[in-house]
Amino acid sequence: MFNKEEELLKIYQEYQRSWEKTLTTIADTIRNQLDGEELKYNLSKRVKPLESLNAKIQDLERKGLDPNTEIKDLLGLRIIVPFLEDVERVVELIEASLDVVDIERKSDSLSFREFAYDSVHMEIQLVDICPELSVNWCQSCEIQIRTILQEAWAEVEHELIYKSAIELPDNQTIRKKLAALNANLVLSDMIFQEIRDKQRELETWGHGRFEKLQERAKEVSLDSLPKYQSATDTELSEKTDKGNNKNIEKILLKALKAHNLENYRRAISLYSEALSTAPSLKVRAIIYHHRGLAYFMLNKERQALRDFENSVKCDPSYYQVLNNRAMLLRRMGLTNEALYNFDRSLELEQNQADVYFLRAQTHYETRNYLSAINDAQMAIQIRPDYSEAQALLQQAQKDQSKLDPKEKDSS
Image (cartoon, rainbow, N blue to C red; front, side, top):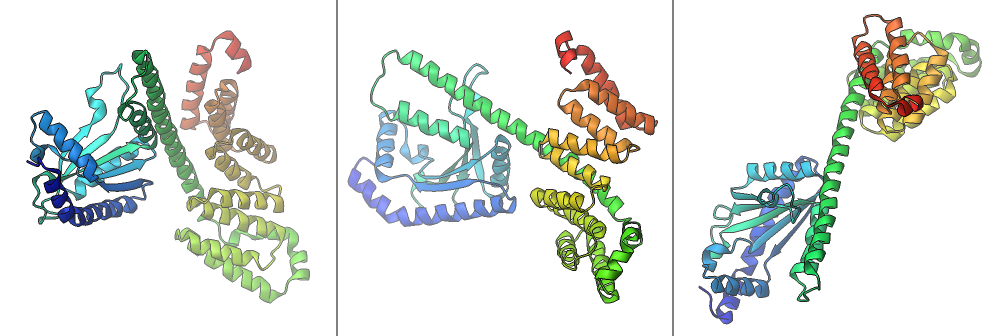
């Protein structure tokens, strides 16, 4: 037991470098795990300052506790992540890579009526990591994991309550106000997570739809290009020679092959090379469209949107690209712009069951149930066995019937 500050200082100075080295080893292990999962995080580490350590030892002794077994946060790591789900993912990764001896979730001790400091504290064993550490109270390391909002609350609460020596008047009221503020932060964390979940759902939906488009794209080859070239054969012969025509065909064959093999970066490079040969507007529209699809599959939404826009500029009658542009805008949350592109596509080609269905989905998501019903019915009229449209129609009719009269009028 350490009852002299001189003795503690001597031990602290003797082991401080080893503690810091051990802490760095642990931090590097965790960073490698988190970076491998491409998680966004902020990691900080600290060895408990001598003054704080001395104060804690004295406090434990006053309480009749043994500092040799009670000090578990001499070495500490803190990991801050954006979302609640990230907290649990970090916990899983640490459990898989380090010797975890205890996990404490601070909120578990609270009732559903209470809002207070929340965090996950993990205790990891140091014996295997640094056997030479012989001081009893340095056998473990504490890792704190929490969200950005939980960290903000912890910092504010620490400054206002724990560090302040000033007793505020009407302290109970102050604590209630602090609890209310914390409740708002907890709710914000939950809402952020819900938004994240919705984004992931939309991303899954978007990729599913575009994977279907990719299947269609695999059917596109140079044999499908003449219908776009036929109107401009004269223009091509006037502005390009046979050598250039053969060159662009060769490039496009390579691009389509790379695209179909899902080598999207290679495909983008080849599409760009094909565009540099200054093909006709109709052919250019197709190339921009395909390059946009490749960009989308690499999650480069802005580049994809730009290529879809350029495709439409080159060929305003190219309704297929309007559909893809609408789906991308919808995925980005730009609902009105998405509906505008669906409208333009259907003006050009009315016999599109899929587009009516997609527009119905978009109307349904904005609670415009009457328009969703009309579009679902149009999709079924074109394709009577369209099960997805039938299910959406039933749901939209059901939700429309639940609206009060005022809402029905505005729907």
